[in-house]
Image 1 (tube, rainbow over the protein chains, first blue to last red):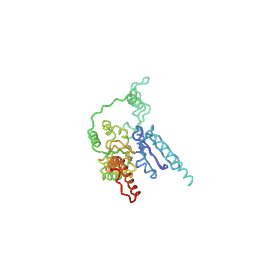
Image 2: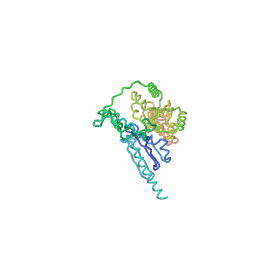
Image 3: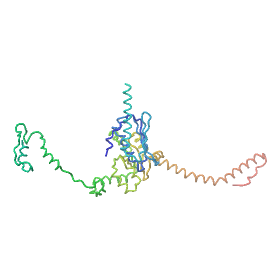
Image 4: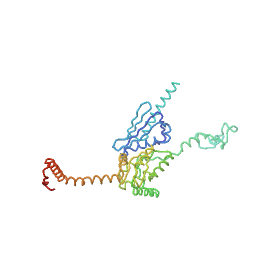
Length: 110
Length: 257
């Protein structure tokens, strides 16, 4: 069983993250843990400019994570049937892919 | 040399003769039996060790496929009991209980937040879900049960200073208000914001009293409206007659109200 703290997510290519959930619904546990994880010191330290907002509603809507990347791409994760680790790995792989692309671009320029 | 000697002494070789002398006796170069370095075992010994290795007994069905044996709770931890009692007291004594999600904050910020809230008589309590859940399920606050997943804190107070609390929490981005229970009414975040916008108790009492006294004050004027209208009409009629008959003696007013 993987521990969520072992997954390192580098948030440099991320512009903002909005986490929307309704706390009275029963399927919000993974989304809440995800929110708790991205607010950790280490993950916040990778990118100080990334704004993390938590949207607490009471309209019975399902939990949603909306990630805006710096190059305009958007990642929507509907957390009703996802675990925390799945969400973190999905975000982590995309961030790493973007990091690699940026490194390649900067290498080509220089 | 020792291996050769042992082979010569062992009398059970089968077709070999008993007790034969080895052709070559490596006396000079071979190391002794007991060496300071790791010495490779004789091949026969290696085979013996390999054959007689320990095999752990494994059950036919792996244990995770069988239904898990329900472990009986041994003794109730006294500490857990104390914490549960504290939580019950908290819910009983305080008028306002706010549940917030706590994402890890730097310690200085925690202390600052605690200090600000203390000034408004609001206490910050860190709670463990496994302790709060059984307490809530037995009390009347069953609807607060689904709130207690992931890390939470409780802000409790005897007074209901919601505006100041909201202002403090706005300055702290890592604490998200989930819901509140004020005077035994469960409010969502929107409800809390609406509650903060309400006027104070004295103002709302004054407004109610004013609205209630408005109707009776209108009733008395309504009842008198008919006779007041009649007197006004008659007065005007008198004035017209007086103005019309200049010089003629004043007629007595026809009706006395």
